[in-house]
Image 1 (cartoon, rainbow, N blue to C red):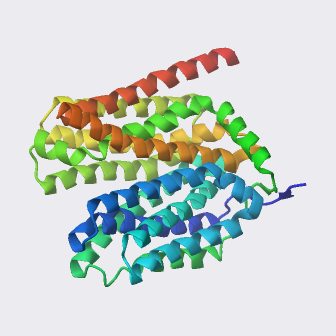
Image 2 (cartoon, helix red, strand yellow):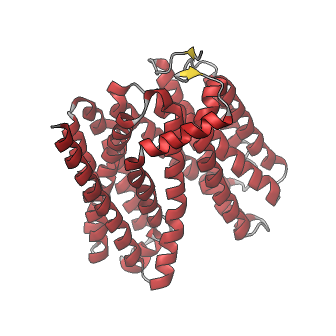
Image 3 (cartoon, one colour):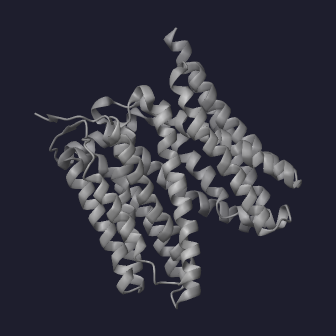
Length: 394
């Protein structure tokens, strides 16, 4: 028989896990978003090796997500998370002593594996009646953690290229120490054979097919923008690096306001209004990106960036709550692991597709247009799904 456990966050456990997530994402931002991209300018490591490191990091994250729910059910959170903290700290500690291609790749892969179970536990253990509010905090910790880690590491590198890289494993160790005070477990612990796990994966995928377009294509559409935004700002808007930074700040500010102050009200509204928020998020996101292909006025684009941030901050918790409503309670950890894996695959494919479209047409507007169409397409797809579901329920 499976051993029942407490699987919901209560009080300090939730906030401790938020801080732990922040610290792990901070370390990830320092290494993946800052240290690795800058390394070719500081050493004889090539850009190709760095690209491989970053790609393998996200591949390892996505692949681990696919099966991490089953590992959590089999061994429990303590064993899995402690192992994750250990390999993350060990991987980042390697580069203190040697920064050859093998250690750089190993650190990237191990960090990708280590972060995965934290996300699955957060997603599967949040209280359902406070999901939108709490997921706003979770996504805020993720976003601020990665961005601040990147910014701080950029500043540290200016002081000295490698003297302070010990801070990266130190942040992981701090997260590990905090985890000693957390008491949360998966829904139940059950030792299952690989055959049973495979059947459960098939069940999860067949049960949640309607969610897959939103998970996968949302990641692709957002990922498409990553490699082309700087070029768009310079060539289409003719703005400076500082003005481009203001665009990012506007988007980040809108996202922060939504995640921290508006998303908490979504727990108190009915399903129909939650569905409207999701549809409006997809549609307005798409229209705002489409607007960016038609105008070159900086202030209008700045306003569009703010709107994109606002609705993205609403869309993430709202979409997460909708996914949670579809999850089989007995397979929570497995389901969230598969969802995260699909999202990771979309996020990996997005930059590749966006870069190829821009290279093919020699114009960033085509990539923006494609991303916008994907979001608008998702809005119509789920409008049809919600309408059809409502009619069946009647």
